[in-house]
Length: 611
Image 1: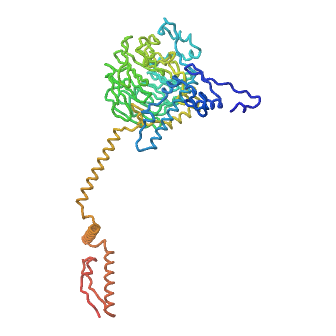
Image 2: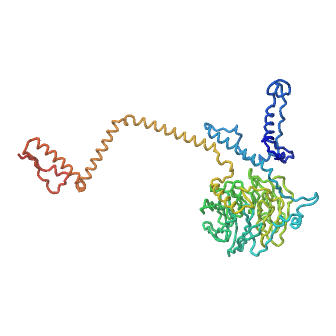
């Protein structure tokens, strides 16, 4: 829109300014100014037309417009959202298929555009993660929950809660958006509640041992591993299903993109069950005894299992053997957690270690501190590691991004209690703790992501949004075969396997051609048209003779009709012969003796001509 196009009395909008991370201000120009800038930017190097030095109308060299410096912050954000590719579009080679090559280039271009748009949209994300600001000599480990709550706002203080219940120890599980909490006590108490309003949806006593609890794709369903079987309940506490295929389950987990409920227990097995239609997808035997701990890798949906021998095994539904087996500790693996390319494990020897899943090497090792083995570990969205040793809870910061941290970020002690379960609340600076005296929360500044994707997990979603997201996630459900160690390999072609397959097909074709060539030499002259017709006629005659022999053996009882037809033909021949001899002449035949079949009756008696 030009300046003259504004109506009388209207006000021209002011020039917009976008604040970038680098601190420089980039003005957003009007369409007319943008066209002029593009027109002038084409005058780099040589001038356009005319004479005169420095003039765009002359033939001399013009300076042109200065090039804009690339935004380093934007480049880093684009690299964060970009998908890993095997090469640039120029390096992409697809032999003898121009259509596929064009489609691959188009997909790569769309991926780059999506990453660029996501990086530019970060300007609109104004929320920042929380943190603890202290003086130089002050240590954050000395801060208690009371000190943090006194310094925090009212919104943070409302997230702190504590329930003292006699049915512990308690296991905790949260929904993907972090809005709902599911707890289960060892003595049979199960409760499902909303964390913001503290409204309890359901509370029931199953009157038997509760081994584990797990929320499913949303707050409408949850699973409870009880004494003997796994039960599925709705948010009102109604029992919907009882899974009896696997007995004595002790550990539960849920894969949200595949809609698979994973369970493992004392019988050294791991099962995947699709909750959309209730069928069991796979069941593998570990042959390593009872499973002590189990967690999933959110990056590739591979299950990590800890065992009594100090081993950690990685399992997928499509492979009956562990895809990776790691010897992590000298004793039983008591707890583990996975965060991207890193894994944290703890053993009964009171040591916990950090592993790199790309090389399967150990990065850090921490020794005994409290005299107890670590019995629960969890990693937050920002990479904070929380672990419990008896009644002590430590939270470490920057474990994966920096060198080995020497001291924890936050410490908390639950006197006279034994911590059973730790789970960080998504998108919040809260850690839910289940212990022998009930369950409570712990405020951990900086633990949750400040910004969320409402299409992925929305903490403030309405009923209509939840229904739409459920339908969309069902349509986008992934198949169990897509679970593998390297998910970037999906859609690619293994060149070695393809080469071996082509070589095998070529060898088979050559073998068939050689066999056909040898057969042609042996059958020379036998497949001529005359020879084939002769063999066909001989075969037909042999079949007719065999039928006649079978008919004679049966006494002619079944072929009376055919014999009558033959007799009629003979009578016609005799009548024709009589007519040729003259009028009044006819041939007569004596009847066949008794016991002779109809087929041979015509051959008995002498024919006499009567005049």
